[in-house]
Image (cartoon, rainbow, N blue to C red):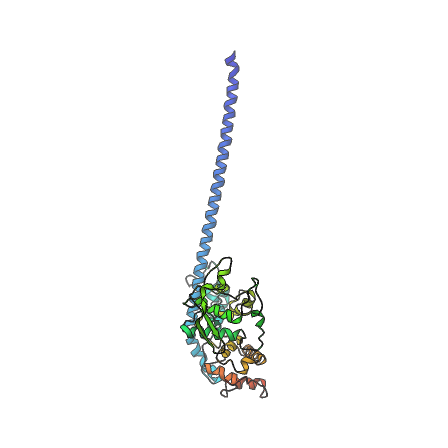
Amino acid sequence: MNRSATRPHRKGSEEGVALILAITTVAILSVMLADMHETTGTAFAVSTSQRDALQAEYMAKSALNLTRLLIAKEPEVRRFIDPLYRGATGGPAPQLPVWNFVNELLAPFCTPEDQRDTLMQLGIDFGDTVGFDDLPGECHVIAVSENGKVNVNDPLFLDGERARNNVATQLFSLTGGQLPESPYDALFTTEDETGTLTTRIDLITAVIDWWDRDIQRTDFDPGAGATRTGGTGTEDDSLYQLYDTPYRNKNAPFDSIQELRLVRGFNDDFWATFVEPIPNDPASRIMTIYASGLININEASAQVLLGRICSYAPEVSLCTDPLEGLKFTQILTTVRQLIPIPLFGRPTDLIDFVEGKGTEKGLYSMLTGFLGEESELVFVPI
């Protein structure tokens, strides 16, 4: 009797164990499936990201190489334009800023599907060209002439005292140091958020001390237009040692424009005034760390050219009279808007323009003919 009574109980226990095993198996398989799905999804996302990054990298390299090719062809373009330029100005054509039009000129190579109809109308067929169908993305090129800006880095073409003097005098004149009352004086007479006052001379010498090779502090005498080292001790006792996270002068050239943020005086106000007036716009930059130390007078802004002139002739009225400086920058900016071609074929053309000299077909004569003979364009004798 007892055996027959316990048989149904054993059967029910076995069924309960089987159900538990089935549920456990399903749970384990669910976890494994979820983990496999997550792993597969992550691997797919990573591979897709790597694929897109690789495609973007090589599209960028292609755009860079095409830009270099276009700039290398500038002499051939100049020879074609030279007769027209000579007829208009009487002088040879200077270097043409082909890099300003690089994005438009490279559009057929960067976005051929958008340009195909236009190219077909011009008789250019990309249909049989290998590598121009179904591009994975687009490339947009912004090319900027760094030699049109004031270089605050160790100049490529200068060394030693000449390099320090070149940077110091340009920075001093650019920031209005030669003016009796400069509109930029407030930047150098107000303490920053840390309570530190950085004068114009402090900023100039701090820039030079950052990249020069020695460990002696640099002194700058604006009156003599010269620098010297070792006059006020070593760089080791600089302001940077007082910060919460102290650091030392690099004593090597700048590697990026953002590295200027580490230099004394390069706060937000100074940055917005002299380094990059329009955020994230390389074309608006007034300073650079990539140039050779020379200035391309056709690419430099009127503000940069005024600073360059005053670094060589700080005593002339153009550099000591704010109204004369404003007159120069406004007229030159207006001229460039009216005549969108390189204005100066030779360095002396800029001096002739400032002094009101030049040939019959020169820029000065062209302007007086356009504005009227009674227009006063003469700024200073240099």
